[in-house]
Length: 521
Image (cartoon, rainbow, N blue to C red; front, side, top):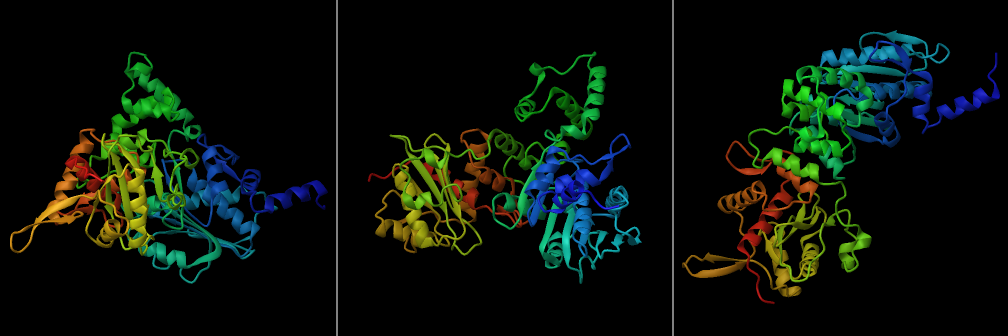
């Protein structure tokens, strides 16, 4: 019997790109937590993920939010809508691989008989379809993963737990079809390659689009868990519920993020059984708290997380609200340059500059602090050449009441100092008293960084941060502080694969602030 015109139009609509959600909700069923087979109705988090998915995606998530499940559904749709497709689901161990494949088979078998392609093979590793498509589920570390294939949808599950992730990712990426999609998804597992990839994506420093899904917004999947936790909490607390006045500071911040009292009672039971650090890693409320640091960290990770939690996204002043910003700075605003507080009349400002050669590797950074210890502006860019940075520093310095500049004499710093003094006639720059080979005192512009001087300025930074003497407004700076460590040789710097340019720029600014001098100009 032929299809009605209405049915044919609906099928045509569902087969078009952009209607993935409707296709999945129409044809696929899943087993819910009550073990019942039900239509796959996506959660808000799953819908957001599907709607915003691009060629390269990286997902940091709380546990059990159903991201793997929706990726399985997308792979099934890919193989049916586009015959001869090849989808690859890679897990970090055999147990996870088996679980993924079981969910794949369940979803595939739930398809209407008229829609489900005939299977040429269905084993513990792959489903091969008569239309030429296949979906494979394998373990990370298999040397044949992706070899010789052209892949149209790839899911790398719990990527933070992989061994040699960078090497394997490079191999799989080379097999990706021009119109294929690669999705990296994981809970956190410390400061590793996944951490670097995620925050690079968040900062628009690589090809990936970052997604973060916290445990608070995923409440629809845990309603019964919350109900059970309320009863357990009451049984342990004289039949009393948790009250607002009993909340600690972190719980109050979670309420501001949307947490309910039921969720907080569930959280308290989780923390009591597994510890706060483990909860932050598996059930983060904000991305930065998910990454548990080691004892080698220089800065207090707990305080970093508390500060980060207090900062709103896009907390810099909107460009349209700044009327006197120089034209050259306007083109960088919102991408490389951010202002958190405009200059105040009579206020003194201090600027630290850690400069690179502008060849796409390390960043040139300008950090601006007020005399009260508040970070008021930040500039970072890894493509601007030193001679261009001199012009930018000149404009930022003059904009902030002819701020005192402290520029590191390394990499692009020396040439910037020369241009600022002689081309731009910038006179308010920090000087260091040094002694030549004849023990004659000489004054040199800028800051000489060596192991001794670096330890001094970093330890000053640590003290000011720990004691609450400074206010940090940059999320990027906090991310760098989180990965600033002492290595095996006793040297301080960024963890492998991370940056410390903002940390050093801030340390230089705070050194100038602590020195307190301003030269008459």
